[in-house]
Image 1 (tube, rainbow, N blue to C red):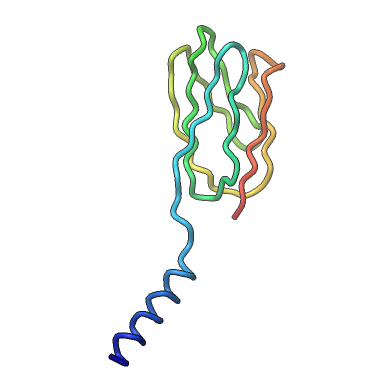
Image 2: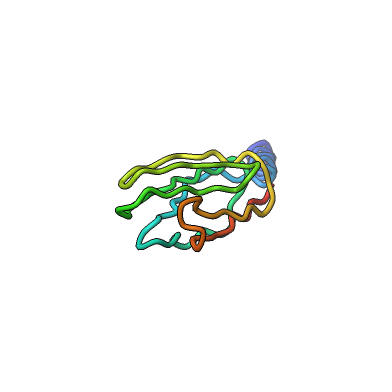
Length: 103
């Protein structure tokens, strides 16, 4: 019985120190606007950019990323750095957003 209790405590300690699992989130472009950017993004998460508009768009954060999406396209982007990354569409500068990525 004592061995089982110690094993349970050890497993709980390992689980508590384990990093959070990465997740996949989506940011949609539609009607010349970026949809909401999910909160609580972390390094290791994947952002899927989806262009539901009839126009070509980009998600561009100079020096960090430049995702080019023809109408109807999807692209995946792995988040590799923490920080706040303001992005725009190169073709439609009124389209703006911010990815806030924690470690």
